[in-house]
Length: 456
Image (cartoon, rainbow, N blue to C red; front, side, top):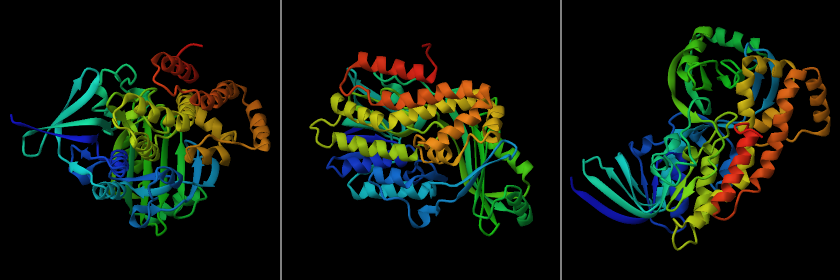
């Protein structure tokens, strides 16, 4: 088969939101960028609605969603227990965003910045010069092979990490994500075929049209069913998710079970399913000539599997650190991107993973206890939705201590995790700022101890 070759500055693989933004941000710094996608370009990334945060767009230097892209504003959310036990009500900081439209906007920005898009590119293979990624080959829609050589490659291919999995440098640092570190989720837009039934559902939860009812712990400790009934009682948005271990079902199965329980939910209008990584970012996600962004680096908020904003921030951070480099794939320059991300966001993501593991350990019974004891309050619920570490007031701390004292078993589980979560923020600030694999190994082992995956 004939192989045609070309050279460019940067190749980004994966044209979802993380990859499209990385390509755009790097190109606007004056680099030649090729964006490679295995599907048609406009099918890259998620094609359904998702919750996003305006502050993360602003941090990523991307305009927050507006118009049709911004499906719904900050809404009232009622967090309830597995069987609907009343919990806490708050105005959520998230906005509902049409991910297909967001992806198209970012790809348009990339094209306007001079990015070349190569879509429907399949059968990718990587070629190394020593330990440095030097080129990739893909099959084009016409059936020929095309080789792309570059100084820097960016893996934005999601949890499978197509380039990451072929990197001899990153393989020891980036284990395959499996089982309890994966979430099976579905986010769908449904017709409502029985307005009276929808009204009874809202009344049972003291909710109004346009508000969201989020049940936690439905299928194990890490699981949720969130239903937003539209203002006119003619449609609903449903988000479901659970651990992808096989013991708690799957997102599609949870959706089917929900339809059986709530027969007023009708045919699907739009939506999709996905499997999301649920772990702290890899300790190392750069190598000579290679950087990971988004789910490929596990740059997600593990407590509920949100990675849109963190993936955007990662791409913009990467672009800033390679902007002035003669060699954008220089190992030291890429390490600076890695260190900045870990120091800025790694602490809260590690702390989130600590509590995601706690929720898994506690199961549905633990979720019931947390709700009934009033330990999920407005402050910590809002912080979790906003992907930040909660900062309770002195009064709230005293109240929480009193509630925990009435549940000593729960206190024995939660208090060590609270301490570890606080320590996670301090550990992030000690991430090695220079290429030092021994120091990184010590840092990673400490992080694993905080998670409880290594003995103290």
